[in-house]
Image (cartoon, rainbow, N blue to C red; front, side, top):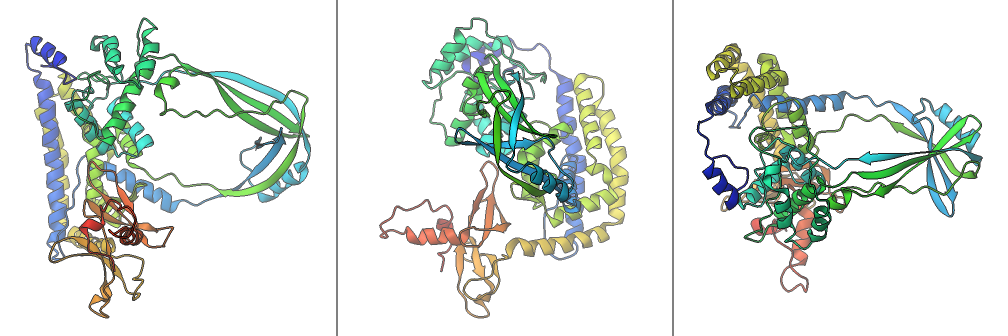
Length: 573
């Protein structure tokens, strides 16, 4: 049976049209992927973990693999770029005019000036002068309707609008799929075939009052044609709502994702949007300034995709050629070139997709695994010291495992198996030829590798549980402590055994805990983050949370806040 939704109609239809033959190449490709993960991932991970464990300094799970290695390499490489970046100063001109009692910011003709003297010279020459309108330039911009969602674009949009991690988006989408509300989410297609029944789905969506006016507008178009994208998937179409009604109340996260998918589906059938982009050119002697603005003429698909589309309209003052306007304020502003941005879960997933490593179904899980191993931290992803050491070890003894082109080539070979141009046995033999010398090199240097890794593990383990903020009661170190009786974690003071200090604070009890390098703006205490698969990371200040918990105890006259942290930790002292 082949089907993309769990609706009764499609399941019955798929059963009536059973395939006459089994697609063994597809089966072989899937088996080969598992075998390659076993050959590379399990063997290399066990060697790294075992080499560190034999040093007798405690256990830590270390892992790598044909996808994990290059992905971690991207993060570590970006961290190296940031640490080696040397900022270069430049200057910009900040100028404004006032027209009809409104302030408008001017753009100088040169975005950057190389020296402060040049910038000051421009300001001295143009301060308080009267600019003349030299020209008004305008052109129309047509924006076509967005493509239907594939998994990657859905994860990107859910992160942008809701802050959902790729793994959380996939988990919510799978629940919607199992409830027959959307099609199969693990797809790389951006195409909606006609046989899914566009009109029938839209009529189903119209059962929700919020979508009814939008569906009515689409149905008057007559011929429904989605703006299909270039990406295709031989197994499944793009993600679309089925039009079925929920059989149970949806969670907040599921409801948001369903709304996003439904509005994107409707938007793909809508007309293009049209806006006017304008620029007013103002001059003084040899200097030119610009006022830039835009105005939407026709909403088109934007009407259907609200509130997930940004209206970037910027009004311009009513000025004509020959009009004059006086500069009200002008100054030279020193700025510096910025290093490249750190990855976030969404941009890292996009990088994996562009490099063709992993699959649409596994990339989100790989990122979550890197968090769980302690290799990466925070939403703006930072590589830990352990990640640096593991990557350095792999690049020294087995550089292939962090080479994204090698992993991408393996993906292409498995695609060849699926297409019938390669054999599973041939791909495995080629992979073993690469792996054997890698394993031998690692085995020969196992003691040295273990010594280096264990040293970093011990250092990071101590850093992971020790706060930078000192105890406000006695000034000694605070650390993450576990209760011997309940096993629950909390913030405890190292002075308990030295001075009898009994200062404690509550901590979240779920997920992996990370001590962040930033402090609370309210009280200055170090922030913590708890992350677990399928949940949005919780960032909180233990000290502020404890204060609120005390203030909202029964009998205080205030409503009790949800005790997600305090119910699982000892009371703050």
